Image (cartoon, rainbow, N blue to C red; front, side):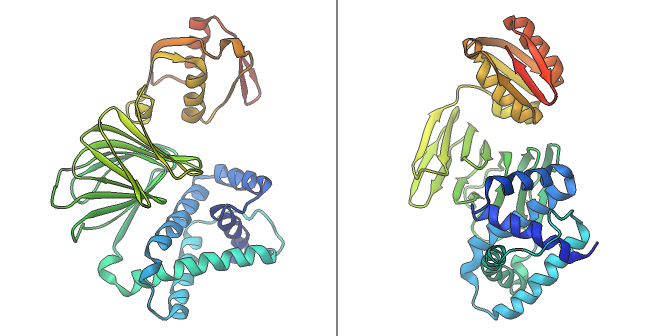
Length: 328
């Protein structure tokens, strides 16, 4: 496949990262992501470079033209390793070219910094793809990645901190070390701990941190909040405030334990979790049943089996219409 055919998907991904993609374009991106695991991995690496470029661009005091040549060589290698299917056969519009140039400008600082500082360039990247994945970090900390999540970290933690970058969702069990805080960068949110266990989830709407043990500090710009066990901090993308709340359920654990524990859980909440867990499209047709509660534990059951139990328990009907599942 000719490598130039990949330029249009790169331009669309840039528009999405800049929040400039139209609804139709975002739908095409989502379709492309669902076509194959290779496409998903390509996007994860693409997004990771984007995120790290914003954090490290300040280090760029070098020949940008030379750095850009190195960047093109690196992305060429990535395309050869992960072929993708073009969305459009025609040339990109001028706007897309401008967006791509913005991406290049942001990346040059990071690429130059990495290439000219070998000691800092030994970054390891772990992506989970379509299943959960457990990884051990250089300090012995254990991280469990939910599907479609990626973590980047150095081969060796040097200096005064242990810094990693996350996209998606992961549970961390951090090895205690008071002399070297553990810091997670999730877009513009920073999670700082010494030694504890907690879950971090990031999506298009918010970043959420749920603490199981220890004390976690969550910060965004000049705001910060300390979160204790059985508490969570929520950072909405649309608002600057950090909100701390008590944790009411254990659903955040489902991808680690394989269990969905319902304790007086309203049906609408369970449907949200099932849609996320199984990539399903379940809707509640009758508003009168939305707040019916269920008390049971679904232990590694299939979606059909789970819905059958829900239907029998709440005396409701489960109807399949193609990929749409209707509860009524």
